[in-house]
Image (tube, rainbow, N blue to C red; front, side, top):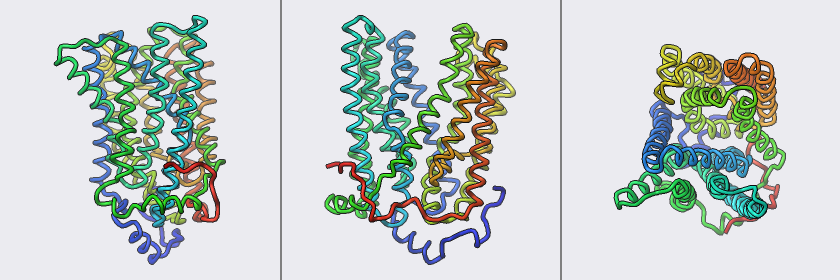
Length: 479
């Protein structure tokens, strides 16, 4: 992993094949992203964090702390529900579509996207109907009322919107539009919400806490509605000419297969990741005070800021891993994996220096002076996050190269370590024990994934990411 490129013998792709593949892509994704392109991706992800901070500031001054807290609860449940609703489809489509586009099979890639989009819409509709029935039953017996009913009602809308947005963003990544993908996924809803709230305030209107949640759901829903129409269906002007007609996509649909086993593994991976990140907040309230859980949450939020580099780098390199794997190009995989690891470490080092030098000040800025006492938590979590940075986007590497079942095993290992650590350490050491469990689980999970990535890089690769044309899927084609 230390070298930039492996010997020529590590690639199963001939120069002629690579040249023809580049010609087939036309104006699609570039073959080698420069530092400027990676920097743009990092900047766009940073813009997402900035717009979120502005959104929280404007909304907090409009609906007050209680209303903002209600908005946070709604947003959290919407994202958890959206990830579960989308299951493994976004990552699956990203891997398959990126490989198909690289092979010049654009019509099949579009047919796959249409099938996945229709599946998410059908799942979302069923999810909404079941949710409405459950809410009505809970309200009838008095189990759901007030703020809880409000959050639950709009969380169903938010989950459907977030699931569609996730799929749309990964389709854009597969087509090489990383900047548009990051803006649509992390910035657009916040920008729309800020504009609407400011317009209401300028008009002299007043927003209640419920209205703030409703506006959040509406702007979040506007993202996939406008995004699919303007960014995906119409496409970038330079690329529009190479997109196939609807009739051609329908004919190509018979050549697209949906690998249910792979999709099941990716769905399990999504569920395990959600469990891994939420487990401390499920266990700690039983063994520590509510105030300590709040301190733990602020420290965790500070560390999460440092993961922005991983998200941005994954957006750039995940489709490239899929393309290299589909061609059996181990040299390309080694080169991009090594580059991603180096960039990940370089991006995290400034955060680590700040976390270690002034942890109390960081927590005071994010949560207030009362949270500065949790500085030891931030140091412990930052060290655990260092392992995450050193291993780079190894999770995406395994998922994009067809070894998602290995990544499921790695994530399950992390969940077990987290659970055991919390049960053993938290009762006697409080939130500091929780922080140690968090850092240990993160370190173990990423170390296992990194070791598995090294194994894959030293195994003979065979092109497997693009399904054989004779296989037929049975998901309906979107109109």
